[in-house]
Image (tube, rainbow, N blue to C red; front, side, top):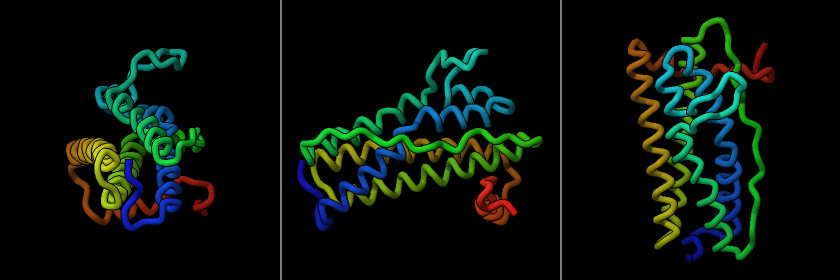
Length: 184
C-alpha cells in the first residue's frame, strides 16, 4: 500500500486511529439503536441490532451490524500494512439508551443523530480516499459505500416514519442533547 498523497503520514495515521476507535464499539451503537427502535418499529430494530433474548443475550446479529463490524478490522489492517505495527482500538464509551416517556420523540432524536454520524463517517472516508490511491483507496471506498448505504437507509426510514418533519424541527432536535453537561 502506498502512503497518503499530499498529507503527512503521521496525520493520516492519527485520523485512521480516530476512525478505528470510533468504529470499534459497533455492538454498543447497534444495541442502542435497536432499543430506540424496538417499541415502534421492531422490524427495523431487528435489521439494525438483531434479536435479543429476555436475559439480554444477543441471539442474532442484525444485518446492519454484520456490515459495520467489518470496518474496524479493515482499518486495523490498513494501519498494520502502512506501519508494520499491530494496533488495538481503544473502545469509546457509547451513549446508551436514554428513554423518556415519549418513545416517538426519542426515536426521532436518535435517528437524526444516527444520520449525522453516518454522514460524518461518509465524509471522513471520502476525504481519506482523496489522499490515497490503489488498494488503500479501494478499501476506503468500500467503507464510504457502507456508510452511505446506512445513512440513506436511516434517512429513508426517517422520512417514512416522520413525514411531518421540517428543517426547523431537524435543527432544534440536533442542537438539543440529553447530556448532563448541556442540560440546564
